[in-house]
Image 1 (cartoon, rainbow, N blue to C red):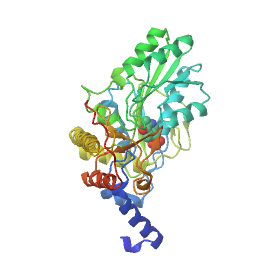
Image 2 (image 1 turned 60 degrees about the horizontal axis):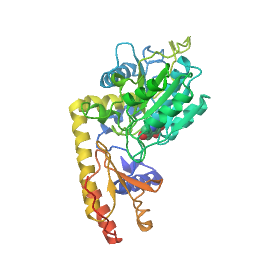
Image 3 (image 1 turned 45 degrees about the vertical axis):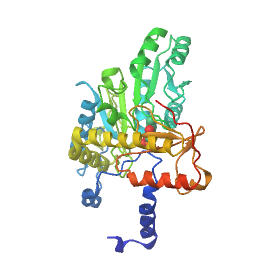
Image 4 (image 1 turned 90 degrees about the vertical axis):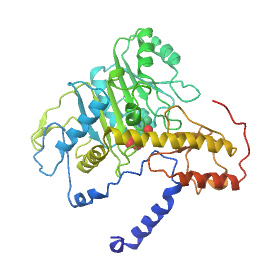
Length: 375
Ligand SMILES: *Cc1c(COP(=O)(O)O)cnc(C)c1O
């Protein structure tokens, strides 16, 4: 196949292959093989409009999309009255959830932690919703005391809260039950709560007994995940599921369906890929991938500390928070740096040999011993 490629693209492909082992700073799984779906690249699959109504355009896979939505609705504890669809990613999911919240509570105020993904600010601003950033603890979880203080000051206004479930730098998860408690205590009556669980939604839901509370059974009104993170779909996508129906728009005659989604044409290929992922893995497969990723993260913390590099990890996280690498290593290891911290994410498919290579580069660049902390 590569023979047929333009030389520019062939070299791009080689570059991607070469960069893969050191590309471990972003939450992208790479162990799910989507190549069996290649024959579908010969078609445009367009799931335009409402997922519940088949469009006139015949090349769609809304039946598969509905199965994907059902799978996640069940995983996140949604009841029979629920709505959801396959989005273009976490950002669209947040925009959708906040637009539903605004329909229900036009005078609402958006509360989100300072560690929330930047898309939350963007969505609130696009919708013209006022927002109040809430302080975080040292590990980036929302400070519920600070939420209480702010919510009390505006207790006559509805609260639209975005819980970050897997923050960008540390993978901390806000606790929906504690958010509800803080709002109740503050005397806020009208509440909409969205769990932005782009990275951690699937692995935490599969770990239900012990993981933080974030889903619909814990009191969230909607939950969203990204498809290209834990499931590693090769195109950006996401799923949003909520317990409120969107403010019903009129059917569009030309489509043969109403459109309550944010975008118009939607990627049927994304729905197909998600369907492929959940069908080939099931709960058991996903759970074991998550366990494996966490084990590699735990081991990476120990090995980095032993090598004299500071490292820590939130319980249940695949993210290992570290001091920024020495300048000389940053080109080869493109790890994000924010707020004086960096991280490695041992997503499913990250090889142990990548960690070996990072450790040996650190040793060669004089990692200095730090105190080994007991946890
Ligand atoms: C990745 C991420 C997003 C954004 O998702 P996109 O698919 O990139 O739009 C939003 N929130 C959280 C918590 C994320 O981890």
